[in-house]
Image (cartoon, rainbow, N blue to C red; front, side):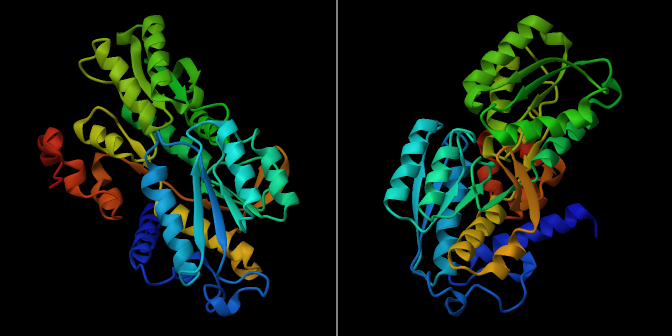
Length: 378
């Protein structure tokens, strides 16, 4: 069994576990010793199952947060605490100041633990310190916040960039050294964006000609589109062999700009997040690939880490956070890095459909029926 198959099996097991609404997630898949954690009898005397998890998510432009992360974390916290625990949720709409206010309010409301997906990893540091001073553990979720965090869970972000870079080289084939490449990276305020970029450059540098590089403000598709329009003017539409786009929403904007400029055949464009629009563009051939990250796996494990931390179940917490990651303000942060999979036309059935993220009906709307049929997606 190869590594990719193993990862997909692990993801499917997680999705199946989440679907069982009345049962807790098995900890065996996470390497936790059988019988440790997951029950009220193992909760510490200080914190039982009647706990409040504060969840701060960064924005709504990427549909994953409202569709997957929040509802899965809410469901998992309830499942892990015999329906006695609750989640208080706030979304910052890509505004660091708004997120800071939301964090302050949760501290004032005395939540028991915080899961924070930072809009701006540096700006959030003072809020993280306030939480620490108030005795509230902080788990950095999806993005590595600065400040004294207790744990971090995300995907292997450099691997994401490496997967994207390798896919781009594969798409270019023998044309790698001849064409000009545009890089559309994410926001400089997001530490994940720097890791995606580093991973991609590790694969691309010295093999392709990167002629334009952009760090897209706030990850906004309108900014990515404006950047791409500038690149087209500077480089020339016919000279652009491929575009590295760090995520799917920006990929959609990049493709719009290319088409509006007159591109009859869109060059290879990468993405990330396996958003529905991105999957549909892959089906139609407009987008070459995306990176599938199992949000059920990340979110369910984040809930387990948060609950284990606040209930003082150190064996379970340590088993879930076996990796170590450094931030600019802290070394050897207990972490869990979730693996990723390259998503192309060839494995849509084996990833997002098999894992229950989308159905064939979701993907193959009227506009995409013929393209779906062409790749055997029925």
